[in-house]
Amino acid sequence: MKDILWLIQNTLRVTFRKKKNIIMYLCMPLVGIFISLLVYGGDQKMNLHVGIVNEDKSEITSDTIEFLKGLENVEISTVSAGQVQDKISSGNLDSVITFEKGYADSVLAGEPDHIEMTSIKGAAITAYVKSYLYQYIDNIATISYVAGGNQQVFEQMYSDYQQTNYKLATHSLEDTAKNKNMANQTIGFLIMIMLMSAGNMAEIILLEKENRTYFRLLSTPINARKYIFSNIVVNMIVMTIQVFITLTIMKNVFHIGLGMSFWSAAFVMILFSLISVGISLVIVSFSNSRSAAGALQNLIITPTVMLSGCFWPVEVMPKSLQKIADFLPQRWTLDTLTKLQEGNAFSGLYLNFTILFAFAAAFFLIAVYRFSRNNSTQNFV
Image (cartoon, rainbow, N blue to C red; front, side, top):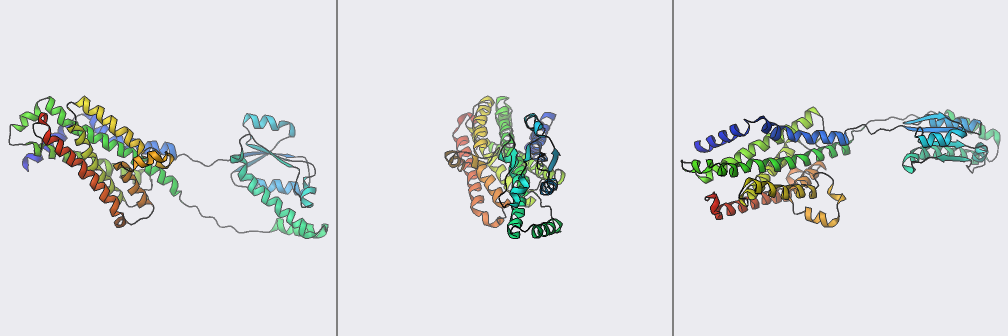
């Protein structure tokens, strides 16, 4: 046990003696937070700039314009008919509503007409205003229909409609979808960093073999099993710190809601760290040099991270690629976190946890077999 503790202390001391390693292992996971803030953290509220051309000059038209001015996130300005094309093409206005002469008469007749909406930005811009405007016009047309052509009755009903006070209570709700997307983006980046960190830490084995340090260690009471075990422990220590730093800063500094308990997320990510160590040892076991290990690491980590949905929702990919993703541990890690965000009980996800443990066990068994069969490693295990 004393030998293992010495190896762990020595590896940590040698690794973090270089400041660039501190940045790479402990600060790089935070980059995912800044990326998610840039992608999802902007204020998405948008004001629509709508121009009004009033050619009708009637009371009903004026009331309709006043109604539009009361809409939230809509800025109304009055323009002339000759300015419409210039204002729209220059982008000063998102759309222009023209009330042509005869608009009020058509509404009174129960057949609203003589109204035109101009925009080059399509329904995505005009749909919001249209939905409220057309409903308002239909209400006036209905009043006219009920009045049955009696001007006095219409004016009384119209006056009552305009003066009616509606009480509306509003409550702001937290945008959970936005928080969920930010959390998933950050965790997806953390998964990639953990895989790369595990690979770099495992490459220490090859580095010390190339420097002949490994063989000098084996001439002491330290054997290959203790050496590999100490490397695994160091890997787990570094990745556990990465997980806790990232989740803590997400929750307490940037207030990004995880959608689940802190400890549930930490448990899942620490479980994935076991898988990361297993993958790194498999890569090292199939490599004869650090350059070969680096190439194999890039060949495995980058494509699998992309396919598993760490950078974008897996649902946007073709069905064939989604089926491939089902065989990747990163995908099952994200799926477990998503189910926890959806409110599934931690104890009810035993299948996901079993599969993740199976991935870890499979990678460790492959690494053990390769080390035991590889003569160039001098029987690591």
